[in-house]
Length: 529
Image (cartoon, rainbow, N blue to C red; front, side, top):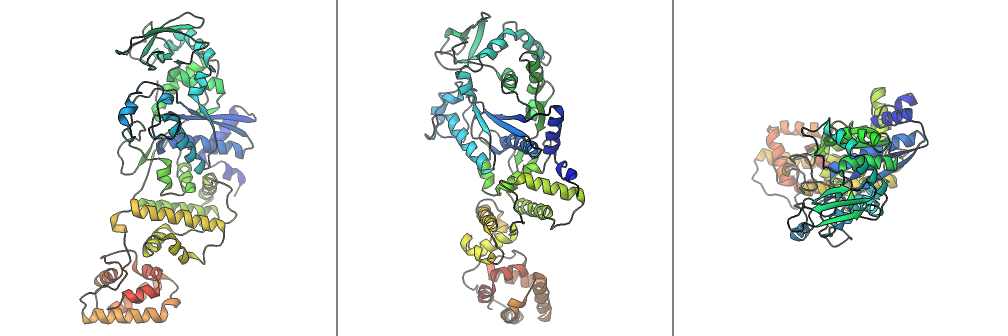
């Protein structure tokens, strides 16, 4: 396989190559950002992963990357999420800066800091390193004061750009700036006059305030640019080369359309390379995840069920403009099987055509938290692992004994522990009821026919004599059918009988493999007539 094919199969690599062709330099600035309006959900994570994968593409080509992550914590607190405590207390801070809203959990200095710290900790679990920029600090330090004045000076240029996409033009009195009122600290204000140098007049339109004031843009901490101006302004300040955006920003006339004109005509910079990403849904949850609505799943919630490398693999496996859903139902098993198949292909242990193998190798490389293991890690099949865990009452330590001969090193041990803990969590919290079972502790008394009694005795005798010589499930399966027919019984009725004896259910895991997994001692004790 050619190295070129291996390097150029993935969209992250193609994007990195395009960036280098556009301008070949030593260091590239890649940007991402989120408003901490509530718990940061898994859908937001796609923006971070999109940027991070492109960063890896650049690093593979010997480039340095500055990955900045903007916390838009100077945005306005507009809605109290339904999933947070102290609703009435939080409601008192509506329309004030998110950074000034208190943490309802009492753990951090602000509402914003609580959600920022939580998400940054989740990013570390995913092997993502970035440079956080807290926009409230930037605005309040005066870093953007010259850009705010420039924005006001070019308000007519900006209005012309925005009006191209508006059904009604902006009024003559419109000002491209927001002000947090000096009296009530809310953004229910209207900028009324700019002297062209540094003084900005405003009025507060809140019925219970009606304050009027004047702020000095050289010293104030209360002025902020609205999103349509704020985004391109920061591109120019940070010299951003690449930033992705959701399709809500990507439609014609949307914020990216206007931002790329504003950054050129107002701030004298060029728009970064842009990549649209589509939404991520959770199977069984209607609609788009929203922090402000509270209907969300976090990265931590996903990590309860999926290994970190698997989460990275899921994102690396889809082009950014394709939406996908993440399952917590029975499809979890299929996702693990697909990941294991890809991993085997990456180590040349699963066949595939050259292009497919090349893609598997690159996607696997992008899915790693650290260095790619020299040899393929141990793969405890998820479905089988779930059976082993349920046979052992979800006790991971006891289940570990089943795999003693297969775990060879520290990485294998980590794989087992990570997967077993997640499988146990999934069984308890998300697995369909028909998938769950509990191995009987004592033999179940049943009314049996003479033929059924004879069959159980013969099966038990065979297992005691030959159990250690059975090399595969198929051999036991065929032997059981042979014995069923010899006793002139119906296979389905016998299988139901055996399941009731073992787990008090009428069906369960594939029977031959299930018996072998349970082990001779417990099987022979439970299958007595």
